Length: 507
Ligand SMILES: Cc1ncc(COP(=O)(O)O)c(C=O)c1O
Image (cartoon, rainbow, N blue to C red; front, side, top):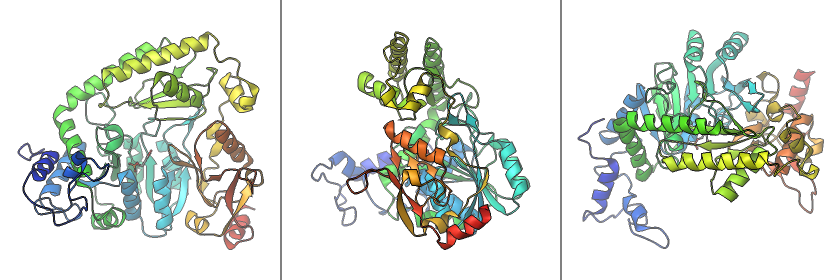
């Protein structure tokens, strides 16, 4: 970090107080307008003299991106103002030729699927192991990657997500070694791990572990504005000019200086205060986990090296409540807004941006909720709330959610062919055996439950109906209406060319 370089926010503030009049974009002319506050507009400039250009960095952004690279141990880093989404699109597009084969974890974010669609890639999937006790996806393993690469010599790049949305960390060092033996690049969607590798006691980040392209959402786990992210590059397996080309394609030609200043600010503050910030972060987390040992009904993914301490996974299985109910109670009764919920767990995020109060309030609320559970406030559940809820929440049933994923291997119909095919809407009960024509996502986290081209199973349809009954946000399902009184979804029209080819292959 160049200490003589004035913080970008300070430069923007100084400029806003100068006497320069803006005969240029943006149209608010740095003034309050309607409900647009002056404080926001004042700092919002475009590429004017003295402020460099992200897409053609000379002094300012070249220096800032170098600082980011140094912090993470990357050879080169790029600021992203379209989130990790833009980084994943660019990384996947640059790593493979059009039509190439990508090996990717099935629990990747939808941006990875969008890249595969746009570049007409063929996909082979790695199905993450399931942590049955908590009913969530673990990170993929080196053994899985090795197996897939041995089976499928055509694979040209590998994409894995680590940490997962729930904080499961993969052995990237071992995976990188395996992937590099084949001479192909490893891309790591480390959107949830921008805080890794920055201080003692934390897992190394994927740049340090040897990945070629690493994507960080700065906004997710560091104190930065929404949409801010970084893409890091190492080695020579991905052509950097090609990467720059895709970054220009997928990102705005008018990147926000407020967002870029926010990345710079996060990198600067972390750089100068990391030891202290992360030591406090870790000790608060450990103290919270010690306090939560008092819970008898609720349980938590235990602190261990494979679990990121920024994620508190509150497991509801066997508690008498579903994860969604825990989420609602925390929100409505304790005024705590979690990140997401599934039927099995509720997820809360912590970062260096939290004060001690965040840990205390969560600990107190969970201990109080646990006492209420022990006192029988929610037991037994009313049958009409859903057979699956009742069975699992009372601890009788085996975990079932992530049974969504199908057999290891290649997609049934390539995504690009499937998504461009003619589709029709059918009731959910008629969908088993048909090929999905649209993505179905549980949001958050935006990991597809169904990908266009996948053959739909009966279990998947039952689960989708259950998710909806539990009030989870399922995208890609058409809600009942007067004209169509049932839940329905889009499938590829029968007897189209693509389904014919797939049927022949499956027989
Ligand atoms: C694993 C993962 N990758 C990528 C993304 C996309 O990140 P962004 O919101 O920064 O575009 C998300 C978003 O939730 C995610 O969970």
